[in-house]
Amino acid sequence: MADRRIAIGVGGAVVLLAALDAYVITTILVTVVQDLGIPINRLERITPVLTGFLLGYVAAMPLLGQLSDRFGRRAVLQVCLLFFAVGSAITAFAHGVPLLTTGRVVQGIAGGALLPVTMALAGDLWEERKRPVVLGTVGAAQELGSVLGPLYGVAVAAAFDDWRWIFWINLPLTAVAMVAIHFTVPGGGRERAAERPGVDVVGGVLLALGLGLLVGGLYNPEPEESALPPWGLPAVGAGVVVLVLFVLWEARARTRLLDLTGVRRGPLFATLGVSLLSGAALMVTLVDVVLVAQTLLEKDSVDGALMLTRFLVALPVAAVAGGFVARRVGDRRPMVAGMAVSAVGFLLISGWPADLENASYGPIPRMDADLIVTGLGLGLVIAPVSSAVLRFVPAAQHGVASAAVVVARMMGMLLGISALSAWGFYRFRSLTADLQMPLPFDEGFKEKLAAYQEALKEALRTQYQEMFWVTAALCVIGALLALMVTSREEASGTPDSSQEELLTH
Image 1 (cartoon, rainbow, N blue to C red):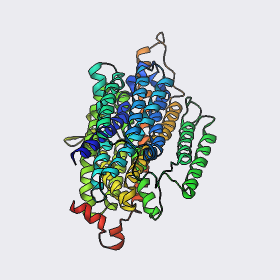
Image 2: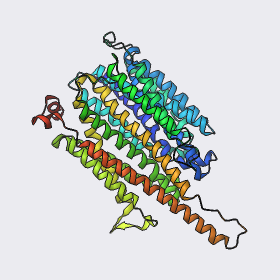
Image 3: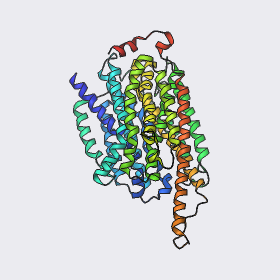
Image 4: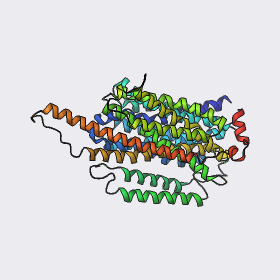
């Protein structure tokens, strides 16, 4: 008993390590931009650094989870940690966007395997009745990364006065993790590997290619003329076609990334859709709130992270509350309420005035209240989504189903930040196209410079406002999708046995 708890504890720790690195870049983005010599008005050039990690993470997660069925959990965890360290070293060493993006992609691919492999390890070590609690603990480590990652990143960067130490530190951490895994995680393949030896390489490649085409089509390094680059529409169209092929392949293949035989697909896909849309909203918040702090309020990276803390504290508080509410009233209601509250929160944020730091609702600062409301809404969705997906699939697939929730959320983060960034950078360029920076020898230079800087800020405010409007609309769509989610006890009027077990244990 103690040995398997140590093993899953080590697995949860490496999941947390990868999850932290998924979010560390959000609060130090402006610092990285300045260090690389990128003008602050050309933030689109850093977008691949954000999307590269997420793309690798999402694309690798399902396929590498299956590979651990063939080659064993310990071997796959060790190899992934080794490559995670390599990716971290490349990222820390990089002095340009191409190499920095390469390092983040390698980190993402390696980190993406750690969650499904650890969840599969839980399936190996625990019997079906006790497995959901263990899976929930591993999933909590993943969710904790979204809360601590932004704060961890800015704290390490401030402590060492260099953002690169965030990634150098990963080298000793991964070395310790590899040693711990060697002594705690059972070696060899699964005993039942002969029964399910297949690995869906074709499905994994199609998923990675489709997502890669979508992200590549949405990235526009020169947004002055249009929201999409010249290759944008063909690449996005090709990505959609490839993803359709992926769905068709998964429907017919003998070995699948997620076997949906006997699963009620409508409620399952609706639940994963909620996870996807909440992921998009989460990433927009993590990136844009910090950018608002640093570009409009002229805060440094530490103060920007502290501003985001209001949201990050509310998120786990609501996640715990959402679990208790879901146990009493079912999964659908907290999911609907959470997405609806999030929509209200983003509408409030979109209306932030120019003098935000002095705006308030009576004695409560407006900025604090709006971020807390938004964090409570998105946090309320976390537990019911995971609970609903586990209820829709057989116990044998709980590990891969739990990973699917994270994959959906990460896909939302990836596609959301890609699409909204493409639109936001294009809007900023169009809003500032007619602005001319005054020359030092112009008459009334100081007044003209002040007017120019205020016009830039107004353009930024408009850009952020529109992005938060779109995010609010995504949350409304998520609330509508959540209405389609019905648990088994809601459909039949009585709790099913798996729900009763979760309530009694």
